[in-house]
Image (cartoon, one colour):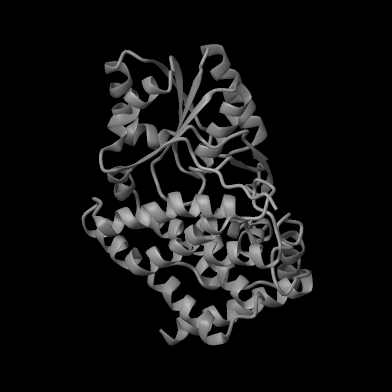
Amino acid sequence: MVSTIGFPGRYVQGPGAIAHLSALLKELGCENTVVVCDDIVREAVGKTVETALADAHLKFAFLRFPGECSVPAIENLAEQARRTGADCVVALGGGKTIDTGKGISKALGATLIVVPTIASNDSPTSRLIVLYDELHRVAGVQLLARNPDAVLVDTQIVAQAPKRFLAAGMGDALSKKFEAGQCHLAGGLNFFGTPSLPIARLLADQCYQAIAEHGVQALQQVEAHQRPDEHVERVVEAAVLFSGLGFESGGLSLAHALTRGFTANEMLSRMLHGELVAFGTVVQLVAQEESDDYVRDHIRLATSLRLPVCFADLGVTALEREQIAHMARLTCDAPYIGNLRPRADAQRVAWAIERADAMGAASKARG
């Protein structure tokens, strides 16, 4: 059986890494670049990027990310980029900005450089473009022909972002151990349409190990000092690189399938992707019939990382059984819902959601 694993063309991480952007553009043969970012990111780091590109005598223009990664947004920005003659897209920002940049590069056939300003999810290294509708619900997924040509992570910028984003990135990353493992056990395929190689599952396991070892100290470091140390570097590596490789080449399962159902709820759709996945991981552990002690141990780890483990943590205090059933039905529409043992239908998913919520709430009540 043939197996596939994918990697970005280059991965650069460390404090001050953004200073290497202009050299990277030149090395990749980029002559005309568009930088995609939102207003907040442009205010925070846009001048740094602008100065670096201008000093290197590179042609560039900024494109304003409107706030949602949708088909109309990508088409509109791609047309703007086309008019500039761009041969390179720099996606500067968070997950939805990054996915929008991917969509623009796909439309233009342009070089893609991803520069995440937060480490809140696993999007930077992958080929996936997660699309949303105007109500912020997951609407579908597209694929690039290849992984990004380069990913550049300036950990000084990441450390200055609100700690909630770093926590969410850990929530997204913690799921990969279980999702890649379940995908393998169920005979599922990764996002290259093949079974996973063992190294993909090892990287997914390393996500959990690195975060369990360094996560609490990393949050303390960014909260107290807003600059990276070894704990922050290890967590960012796990949340961006290992997590991205682990899910794309290892496969996904219930924890991510649940985002289809969760984002259909207006309140939950406002939460960060990694926060939803964090609770989704608790649901998956229940659904795959881990022992109560094992689930509680994971809940304690997630809680120590300030991650949600029940609906109350996500700002939802009362859900009707039919609302949970609706979430479960939407969840079962995800293409990787079959990557779970024992297999789950909507009824079983609804049960696992309710059970996980009760266990998370009970754990929080006990302190």
